[in-house]
Amino acid sequence: MAQTRVEKVGTIYTRISSLIRGGAMTDLEKPLWYTIYERFPPKYEPKYDRVTPYVPIRPIYYKEDIIRARFHKDYKNLDIMNLKNTKYLSQTKKFLDTYNELKMLDLPDEAAYEQALEKLKSTNIEDKKNNIWYDI
Image (cartoon, rainbow, N blue to C red; front, side, top):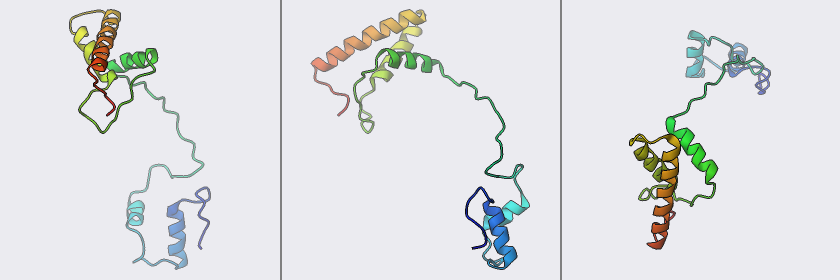
């Protein structure tokens, strides 16, 4: 072997370069990416010990994420759902749809949240009476 395979010692580019320089690999055996890498080298050398720059991660939230998080925080024991079955909506999706309908009626956030919970509870009771299961 030309060099060690540990990435801490060298990159794949330096290892292939050593094989070509040493005669263990010919120009015909040279991988396609090697020519591209030589023609367009990276801005920063991909080294194992290179310190990554600090880039703060911006919080990206959709409007429904906050409501969804609150719903899942308040109600941890939701029914199990089979993801292969697209016939039925999840309880979270039903809640969000109801909440959005109530928000369109210009209700405040808290009132819309409480009324959406009440509607969800009443539909779940009716579904269980009618023997509709959402995880089948």
